[in-house]
Image 1 (cartoon, one colour):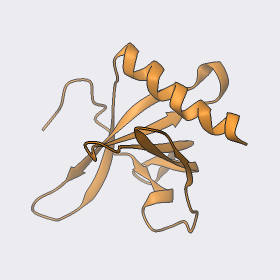
Image 2: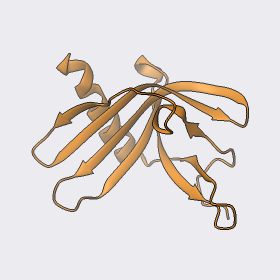
Image 3: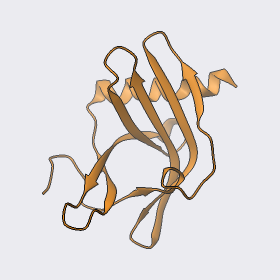
Length: 119
C-alpha cells in the first residue's frame, strides 16, 4: 500500500524502539502535552539515514496524537509526519515519513522550538 506524499523507504526511530533509556523532555501547554526525544537515529534497512528528534503532540481535549520527526538543524530543519505501518502477516512494525502541508510544518516546527526556549 502506498499513501500519497509518503516516502517508500521504511524508517525507524531507534530511540523509541526500546534501544534507548532516554526519558523524553516534556512541556505542558494549556491544550496539549509535548514530548521530545533528541538524538533519534532514523535508518533505512541497515544503513543510517540521519539523526534528528522525535516530537509527540497529545491533544488534551481529544487525546489525539501527532508523531513527527524533526530532521536537520537551524534554518534547514524540516518536519515529517511519522506514519506507523504494521504488516498484518508478520506483525512487523515500522515507520515511514509523510509530507506535511505548509501550515502544519510551521506549527510543528514552532512547537519544537519551544523546547529550546525552555532550557
